[in-house]
Length: 62
Image (cartoon, rainbow, N blue to C red; front, side):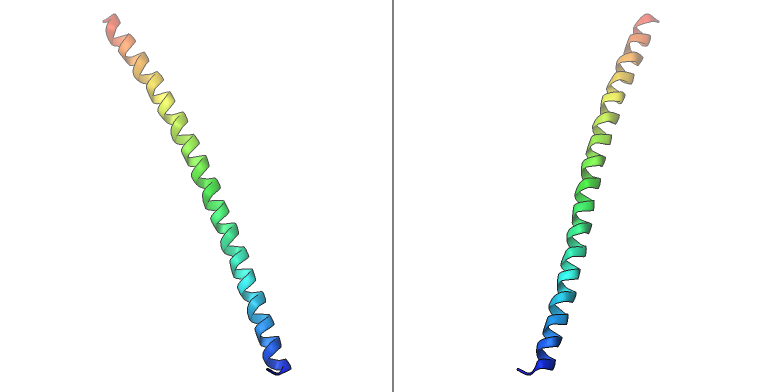
């Protein structure tokens, strides 16, 4: 293997390393977004339960 081939392999490895780094960051962002979405859904479900309770109380007064 000559020096040119070695340098090409080094560049290729560097490029692949950058791709892996980018994909890892994207994956981490997706995980964070999923966690944020899950928390938002939980909060909305809790608020919905409160509203349903309030509605049933109001209906009971009529």
